[in-house]
Image (cartoon, rainbow, N blue to C red):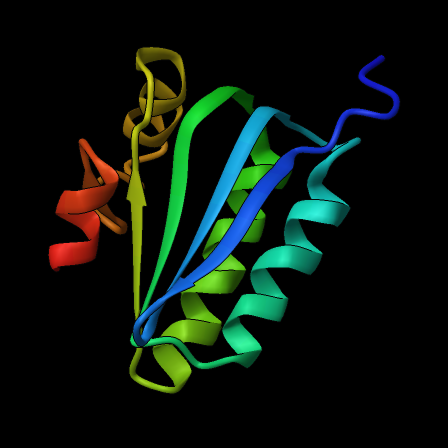
Length: 115
Protein backbone atom coordinates (compact mmCIF):
# COMPACT_ATOMS: atom_id res chain seq x y z
CA UNK A 1 0.00 0.00 0.00
CA UNK A 2 1.82 3.08 -1.26
CA UNK A 3 5.26 1.52 -0.66
CA UNK A 4 8.08 3.60 -2.09
CA UNK A 5 5.86 6.61 -2.68
CA UNK A 6 7.33 9.82 -1.30
CA UNK A 7 4.62 12.00 0.22
CA UNK A 8 6.99 14.97 0.54
CA UNK A 9 7.30 16.15 -3.04
CA UNK A 10 9.34 19.32 -2.51
CA UNK A 11 10.78 21.58 0.19
CA UNK A 12 11.99 24.99 -0.94
CA UNK A 13 13.02 28.28 0.63
CA UNK A 14 11.50 31.46 -0.77
CA UNK A 15 13.09 34.45 0.94
CA UNK A 16 12.27 34.16 4.67
CA UNK A 17 9.56 31.54 4.00
CA UNK A 18 9.63 27.78 3.47
CA UNK A 19 7.20 25.92 1.21
CA UNK A 20 6.60 22.19 1.72
CA UNK A 21 4.69 20.50 -1.09
CA UNK A 22 2.96 17.25 -0.14
CA UNK A 23 1.35 14.71 -2.46
CA UNK A 24 -0.69 11.52 -2.28
CA UNK A 25 -2.19 10.12 0.91
CA UNK A 26 -1.04 11.73 4.16
CA UNK A 27 -1.95 8.77 6.34
CA UNK A 28 -0.48 6.72 9.17
CA UNK A 29 1.95 5.04 6.76
CA UNK A 30 3.32 8.34 5.38
CA UNK A 31 3.00 10.64 8.39
CA UNK A 32 6.53 9.94 9.74
CA UNK A 33 8.17 11.36 6.60
CA UNK A 34 5.76 14.32 6.56
CA UNK A 35 6.48 14.94 10.25
CA UNK A 36 10.24 14.85 9.63
CA UNK A 37 10.02 17.34 6.74
CA UNK A 38 7.72 19.77 8.55
CA UNK A 39 9.60 19.68 11.86
CA UNK A 40 12.85 20.12 9.92
CA UNK A 41 11.35 23.17 8.23
CA UNK A 42 10.26 24.54 11.64
CA UNK A 43 13.82 24.27 12.90
CA UNK A 44 14.81 26.80 10.22
CA UNK A 45 12.33 29.22 11.86
CA UNK A 46 10.76 30.57 8.66
CA UNK A 47 8.63 33.71 8.78
CA UNK A 48 5.87 31.69 7.12
CA UNK A 49 5.72 27.93 6.67
CA UNK A 50 3.44 27.17 3.75
CA UNK A 51 2.16 23.61 3.36
CA UNK A 52 0.91 23.08 -0.19
CA UNK A 53 -1.72 20.32 -0.21
CA UNK A 54 -2.80 20.68 -3.85
CA UNK A 55 -1.69 17.14 -4.72
CA UNK A 56 -2.85 15.51 -1.47
CA UNK A 57 -5.67 13.08 -2.19
CA UNK A 58 -6.39 12.02 1.40
CA UNK A 59 -5.45 13.00 4.96
CA UNK A 60 -6.27 11.03 8.10
CA UNK A 61 -6.07 11.97 11.77
CA UNK A 62 -2.33 11.28 11.94
CA UNK A 63 -1.76 13.89 9.23
CA UNK A 64 -4.02 16.36 11.01
CA UNK A 65 -2.19 15.69 14.28
CA UNK A 66 1.14 16.41 12.61
CA UNK A 67 -0.16 19.74 11.30
CA UNK A 68 -1.43 20.70 14.77
CA UNK A 69 1.98 19.89 16.28
CA UNK A 70 3.73 21.94 13.59
CA UNK A 71 1.31 24.82 14.22
CA UNK A 72 2.32 24.80 17.90
CA UNK A 73 6.03 24.74 17.04
CA UNK A 74 5.69 27.64 14.61
CA UNK A 75 3.59 29.62 17.09
CA UNK A 76 6.25 29.11 19.77
CA UNK A 77 8.68 31.28 17.81
CA UNK A 78 5.97 33.66 16.53
CA UNK A 79 6.08 32.39 12.95
CA UNK A 80 3.13 31.70 10.67
CA UNK A 81 1.70 28.50 9.24
CA UNK A 82 -0.49 28.54 6.15
CA UNK A 83 -2.13 25.68 4.29
CA UNK A 84 -3.12 25.93 0.64
CA UNK A 85 -4.66 23.96 -2.18
CA UNK A 86 -6.99 21.73 -0.17
CA UNK A 87 -9.28 19.67 -2.38
CA UNK A 88 -12.89 19.09 -1.36
CA UNK A 89 -12.15 15.78 0.38
CA UNK A 90 -9.26 17.14 2.46
CA UNK A 91 -11.09 20.40 3.21
CA UNK A 92 -14.07 18.42 4.54
CA UNK A 93 -11.81 16.76 7.13
CA UNK A 94 -10.80 20.22 8.35
CA UNK A 95 -14.42 21.41 8.36
CA UNK A 96 -15.75 18.37 10.25
CA UNK A 97 -13.08 18.80 12.93
CA UNK A 98 -13.58 22.60 12.95
CA UNK A 99 -9.87 22.99 12.23
CA UNK A 100 -10.72 25.18 9.24
CA UNK A 101 -11.20 27.90 11.90
CA UNK A 102 -7.85 27.05 13.54
CA UNK A 103 -5.56 27.06 10.48
CA UNK A 104 -5.02 29.81 7.92
CA UNK A 105 -6.23 28.18 4.70
CA UNK A 106 -5.71 29.68 1.25
CA UNK A 107 -6.78 28.62 -2.22
CA UNK A 108 -3.33 29.03 -3.76
CA UNK A 109 0.30 29.00 -2.75
CA UNK A 110 0.78 32.59 -3.92
CA UNK A 111 -2.08 33.76 -1.65
CA UNK A 112 -0.53 31.88 1.28
CA UNK A 113 2.88 33.42 0.58
CA UNK A 114 1.37 36.92 0.56
CA UNK A 115 0.06 36.44 4.13
